[in-house]
Picture 1 (cartoon, rainbow, N blue to C red):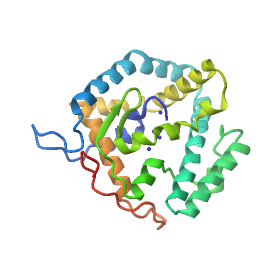
Picture 2: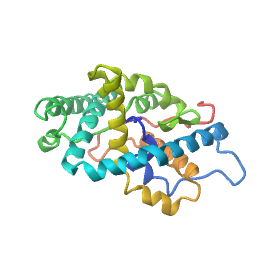
Picture 3: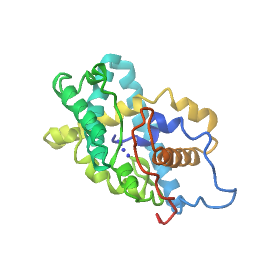
Length: 250
């Protein structure tokens, strides 16, 4: 579900592939950004059990039964909603052109793309440029704060977790009525996201001796790398360097 989707943020593809070169704390010493490690490990174990016994089997069945074009269309709908937050995030960072571009993506994909089922904007040269409210806070000088593992949602930080309620206020559940329909929308998003990373999961199984450490370092490295990147490949400023995040967030 994340700074971005409900349910399986810890298994997002980019997160799975980004931690190999991360710097770890010396053996026997606590990680400076993980003062809640004991609590986090318990939550991580709960999430792993939930995934193993429920979410992963459902994702495998979904991938086997639902045709690839339909799965892609479902993913496009959730991606279209995230583009709306990207547009707002770029604007709040003062990147007006990028904000307007992502806003145009939402407009085109919602109308010509039939509610976001089809990514027509990419054919018009409007590429996806993801940003989130957590990155916006980073651009404003707010540090990540302590690392935290959220039940079901997975790896996060104090800063990114703080904006989750606002981010989740615009989701597929906003457009359906009834508790059953809302629960179905959340489950569809979780299963769709989980199915999209089934193949990448094998990489973790092959290289990670401690999956908790792998996912923690992957998350922290990825968020820090995004904050350090001052310009993209076209020379547009993205975000200002983020202040060094300590366990206290100062």
